Length: 478
Image 1: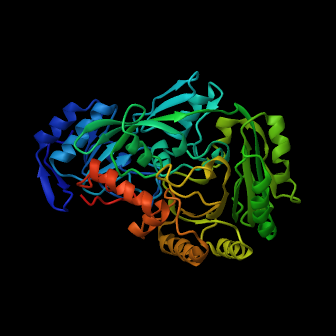
Image 2: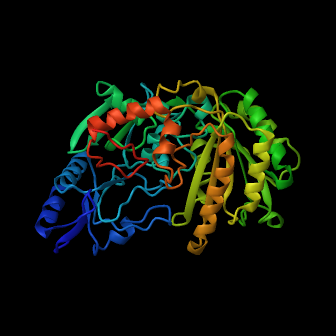
């Protein structure tokens, strides 16, 4: 631990020097580690998945249990410090780290306990999708999570959670049964169960505005462990047909299937034919969570749109299916994503999507078409903080390695999204938020005015000083 004073930034933006003895006192109260600049682990610990984020917190509290989180939050409260919360560190907006403040790092808290009889799982706030999938699949069960196994469950859940099971079983937040939360001042509360039902409502899609969520309890569903996966890349000249087929197939397919269509350029890897490297493609992907033989029949239409570039479909373990897209998102690359929600995919929208994809500055970028409905679409807008459930989500992902290319990649996403706004319902998926440039306007449109007002009331009750502001922030009015 540091033997010198540490300079931190207060919530008001003022610098304050905290003596080495006070820092050492906090360190002695933690079962985990307290890192400051100069510590051997500090430089690595301050990094997050998105290489566009380069921030230097004054302190990083690596918490091993809820008592560590309480100590860290109380220290921040005592010194009026801004607090960032790191779960998996995979959030594209980079809110897991803050300049000059305190990071509450939950990454050591990755235990997962499964009750197969009750079909529930309780996971630590630092858990990743792979941690939960590994534990639940041992019992032939799964929570509806995302599609990249290294994603943290915390950010995913708190802003919704779309994945391969969304039409079958809903969003991740729809399956959140309870949570343990450390609120401002270091108070430990329970959301759901015998605890605060209003806080649970807010955590189901309302973001990380209300405290540090140290554990999540999920409803589980029978899945796998062997399932059938469709994953086919078609030539780019057929992209309009592939996108339109994805929408029409979804309208009639069993709700067990949640298709994803995405357009981009063929990766230059051994998994794809060398002669196709760099060429435009349109991909269709989906999983069937039940019997692989039944799944093969249900998913077959996704594989019959003509000669593909490559067909990677086949039976596999669910845990393997959850890693299919992992290699597309290396740690430390640069990512800038935004999204729009639509009620339908009109031909005009499809034409614009294809023009945008062709103009992407990076060969690694994609435009993703999430066709929704099913269980996800039947949840009333006011039943969770997540809000309305439009039929289609368009996600624009600028994925690139070169820092010098940031401006053109960010501009590509912003300009494309601006062109689509006239077709949108106004909302966005807040796990694909850009850097929340629109601020309050985007949040109100995404949650809906009634839900937004209800979230403000929860914020007023639990965090009136806005300690937890590094998120899609809902400012208190208290």
